[in-house]
Image (cartoon, rainbow, N blue to C red; front, side, top):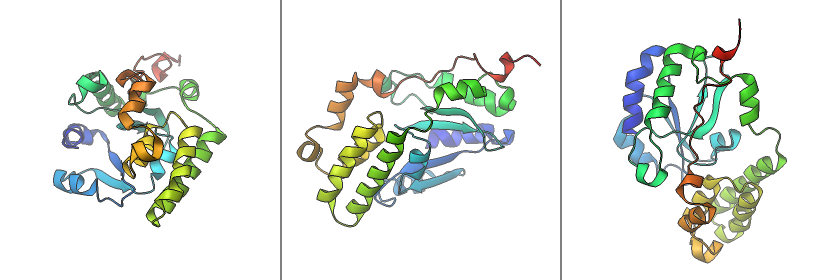
Length: 218
C-alpha cells in the first residue's frame, strides 16, 4: 500500500484516482490494520463479500483494472505490482506496468496502452455460466462460514474452485479459513507448484501497443 500511495501522489493531478479493495471475508480483521497503518489518501475499501473480484472475475492479487472517466474499462484484469518486493517469486519487473499506467494517466485513452474495443473483447470472458455459478457457490460458502458452519461451507468452496479453476483467490481464501491439508488434501503452495510455479501464478501483463486507439486511422 505505501507503493500505491507514492503512485497516487505522482499521478493524482492528471485526473487519476485509485480505488483499492482488500478481499477479507473476516470483515476487515486481517486487512484493516494494514490499511489503517498505511494512512492512504486514496480510496481503500474492504471487500468482505469479494464483490469486486466476482464482478470483474479477478482471479489473483494484485490485480488492476483501468477504468476511464466515462466508466468504460480500457484495460481488463491483469497483474499489477507496484514495486519489486516480490520479484524473486513472481519473476516480474514492476516498471513496465507502472510506466504504462503513468502514460495512460497523462494521455488518457490516447495512450498506446488503452485497449481498443476489439482487443478488449479478445481479453474479456463474457457470458461464461461456470464463472457466474462459481461466484454463487463461493458466496454461499462464505455465508455458511460466517454462520459458523465451516464443515457445510467446504463443499461449496470446492465447487467454486472446480467451476473456475483459474481463480487463485478462491483457493487462497478457502484454504485460509480452514486446515487446507485436512479439508482439501493440499496446500496453497502445492497448488502453485502443480500449476507450473510462479510464472503460471503470475502471468505477465500484455503491454504490447497493438490494438490501441493510436493504431486506428482518423
